[in-house]
Structure formats: structure tokens, C-alpha cells
Image (cartoon, rainbow, N blue to C red; front, side, top):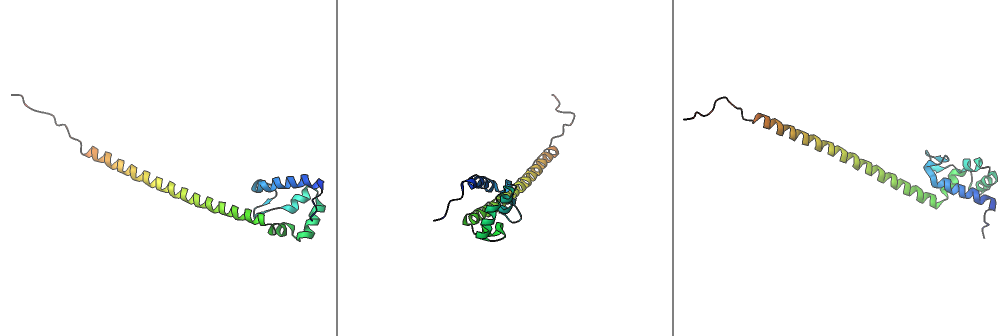
Length: 134
């Protein structure tokens, strides 16, 4: 039966959960690798014993080996990739919509310009004179 972590780690693990939950907004997020910097987190919080224990369990470098073994991390990563794909698709649709709106506006303005130009040309000219009364 696995042992539960010592009680003094509970606070640290709660803080770790919060920081991982913040993900991109956390100072421990490594954008180039799409990983949470577990090594630096543990070092910053002076949990070197826990870091050594995790390195013995998962191997070195801890960041890569720890997260590779986590199914939840891979599910999170897949979900994030899907969200990014959908965001890119939505941005493309928004761009196409705005371009179409701009073209529609240009066509509308040209039509109005043609309509007003045609009205100006077709106006009747008033010639002095008129009917003679009998």
C-alpha cells in the first residue's frame, strides 16, 4: 500500500496544484517545452528532499520524466492543442468574415456612387421661357 505524503508536504502539494492550474500564467511554465518547471518549483520552495525522491522514482531530468509518465498531463496537453487549433480556425474565420465585410462595403459604396452619379446626369435642365398664354 502506498504511503501518504508527509503532512508538511500537503501545503506544498496544494500550492503545486494551484500553480499547475494557472499553467501559462504561472512563473514556472516553460512555453518552449509546454511543461511546468517542477524542478525549479521544488527548489524555490526548499523541498530538495522531495525533489531527490522524485528524481530517484522518475529519473533525471525530472521535468521531462515526471510529466511524460503522467496520463493527466498528456490529456491536458491534447486538450490544449485542440483549443489552440480551434482558436486558430476561429481566427481564420473571423479574418475571412472581416475581409468579406470590407469587400461588401466597397461594393455597396461603388453602387451608391454609381446611383448618385446617374441621378446627377439624368436631372432635367430648366430652360427659361415657358408657355405662352393665349
